[in-house]
Image (cartoon, rainbow over all chains, first blue to last red; front, side, top):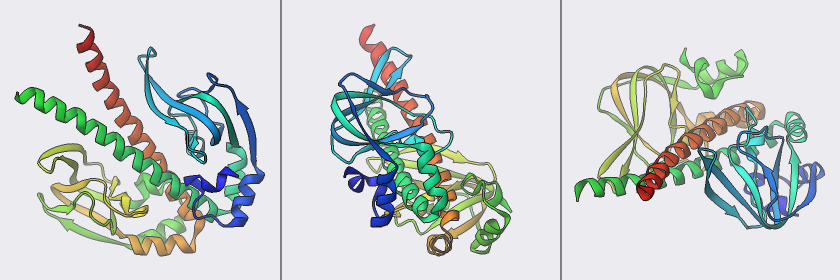
Length: 154
Length: 154
């Protein structure tokens, strides 16, 4: 089961993992299928079992800005489902026929309400992940600023 | 007390807020004082009561890249203290004589260990905040890409 290797579920007990597995559903998606679009209600999150999924954003609704391609089994996406206002922050398209574990937002919320510690562990992992992505994105911005500085000073 | 207006502590009960107030300490800092530097161990977080604090990053240890100036009472910073590996992701310098509420990481961790729900509520608020900053930073990157596209096509 791929859930146990997902960063979101690190540090959970066997029992907590079993509760998560019980609320997850395996689905198969074909290459080219859109799983969700930016700003749509985030009603479920996904863990990759096999295949590949591309996360992207669009500039002016026209130019596609690739963010990342998820290929490692155990990677998760659609985690905006876990936090208010529950809207996807990126779009996701299947890049290669894939098998996914889907977890519905409602089911996860119910589980967390019964188990505050489980919620704390998952949300700490999620906050850490967002902070890491934020640092990476700031790093990219720095590269742009550096290019700009160089072009101004030469 | 400014803690109650901080985004991190929204949705907490009166009792939970009192527990937080009990572990916070008021400190005064002078303009120009560094509160912490990027990548240092994050042993405490802060809530602004009055004054102003500047958050910044550096490019090649030389050029300062301003990220934001915190002026609104109730704003918090140094929240990397809440998540592993507990290292500050930015530097903080007092931009105008300030009064702060400081909360030590150890004290907060102890409080959360006794109260899973409190931890879940705080970490959900924190994850939401990081996601919002991530979206903003991606937005800035998009502007740079747009400029790049335009300069390539004209």
